[in-house]
Length: 262
Length: 338
Image (tube, rainbow over all chains, first blue to last red; front, side, top):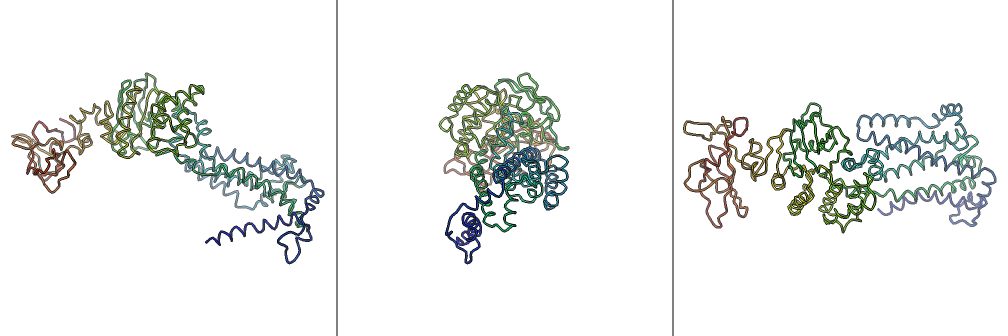
């Protein structure tokens, strides 16, 4: 049984380790056969080459801005929607159906009409990536909604009613009672949506032709035969992704509902 | 502190009547127990009074102010939920302070009043804990403290003892009674347990099928039940109800399932010895020893009857017992007291 745990962990971690090794070793070593498991020489030359070849920092900043704004916009939409729909069976089902519809087509198919729309609206290739934020929000809504609604629905109705009788207006009930109790689910939604935006490739490639974010850069280096440079970009992408997981992980601890009753 | 008055309050859901024409005046500081089986409309009454649901008909006034069309947060009505409904993400102190905080009361006043009510309810030692770290009895007292801290005009309790174990229940019951007396808050106490209703209520309202059966002080409810429902619901066990017919020489219990009237006899009203009245044959094999008393079943005209006798240690059960005529309660065919 424990072997299975080790196997799962290895399947997950070996590619990650290879990417990091490639990022910090000379390109020649990364294609050597048999592979060198322990790097012979450690170097930052791949990172220097990436920085020299492209606008790395603006791309990093753009990826970050897009991911943070996507999280903010998605939560701003799914939290009120979830608050309303969670206990109205019919509204809830209708919203579910609509949200699933946006996921039946590949994003590449949606990117073309979106690009046309964004050109008119001045959002195409927008320097801060505002168009990309909208596209990512569209993609993230179903996931964000399902996770957030699950948490909002688990808040005991009588605790909210108690707050109402304790003199809270409905808005303050949401702010002081419902949202804090649903915090683990909202944290999970924020984390998943951040990672979805951070890693998203198709819209990023098609909607930001010159003002690029990180994933298309990675693609270009890999496609043009620079595995070391591609790995360096991947290593750079890993940092903020890990950081967001570590920052939000404590809020995901459950058990917040426990203790309200009997 | 205020009197409450209900006039023709009703609530129906899609044609189903949950509460019908509820009319009651509750005096300032009075504790009225609302008693009934599940589904009798007692929870609906609380929810409508609290404003969690709108009444379909009727009006509610508290302290002279009409509240049935006021939002729940503005009604000045506090409620202790059956589930306690504590805020799990807040400490006990924050839970108790919450109603004051929502009313914009200054931090130091809040703190003082929360500590006062906490010490009165003996939860001052756990003020900085979260509800999850409390025992059932402590959670119950936190729920009481949260409801009492703002001195509401009307205090609603929804089966507050039902989640406590039997031993704790008696002590908390006494505690609630003493607390309500001291604070002097007008209270509606909803329960399905007649012992609770009888021991706590200044008056008891018996509800069945959404309708008031009787409103009376506990003693009167026991001594003069207005309907057969009240007669059978109040008492442990409830009153024996037997179909009877009026004969030339008096009233006689009949074997038929329906007579033209109903005779009620409390299980504890039977006596031994040579007296006139309803004679019941005892079945000694059904004997249940309860301590000071013994419960047995007897028979009359084919009907089973519960009989409660004082226990005689080592004694033999009498072969028959008698319910004297003055211990009979008479009800008409519709179950109303005659």
